[in-house]
Length: 316
Image (spheres, helix red, strand yellow):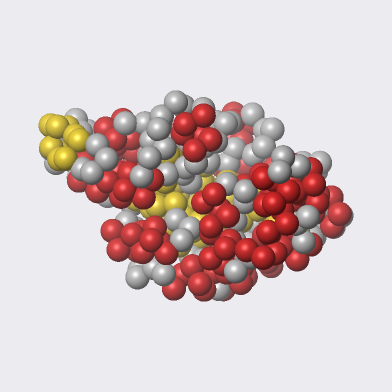
């Protein structure tokens, strides 16, 4: 078995209540802990804690937005995580979304591809410890140099969905991080990369109540896949017609009706659900199809989430 990741912290579980679980992860077969950053915890603090609770798992951000921290601050934070983890940190960065960047943080969401590319290029230079004075297309840095450069290289991965960003990730970064795709979509995504690691966040709902899993899945899909970048991603993947009724209802203001119009086959492709054993097998399909690092994002089912993480381990 290759890499097997988990997204932490778990929904509704206080950050400090993860200590015992994190200490067990490597023995359970998990190789990675990846964070997220939307409106809950920030991407970095849970990883700094996890670095002290386990000295074996790799730690990564999936992702830290390139707009909401200045380039130098992002470099300093990455260098600190690399230090406290003993070189086990992977910096995942990406454009994020207009809601997070503009509506919540008051930063213009302009030229996301260029901003991500420029931030990647700056970070690659800054994290080596060199002094950076550069005019990039989307920002300028003059005379920045880390006081404490990382002792070990910090891999940088890009949030990527469509060909342009996937190619950039394969060409200039250490890999790509993607999500909201089916196992069958992986070869198409992988084909756009010339090299590097491919990580995928996979939404997993371990319940045999298919109706409940699909209801939760429809709510999430209608919320995420109506964001323009995800809508374009699924057009490219070939789901444009299947999702057209959802988009039309959403655009008319009928949020509840939009969710109801998502076909079962789309939900079942994008949300892993069923028994724990079935879920584990479906996550493994992503790896078989070309994902180097499948990262489980556990959806709440009412069962104890800490126990479900243990049950979903590859060696369980």
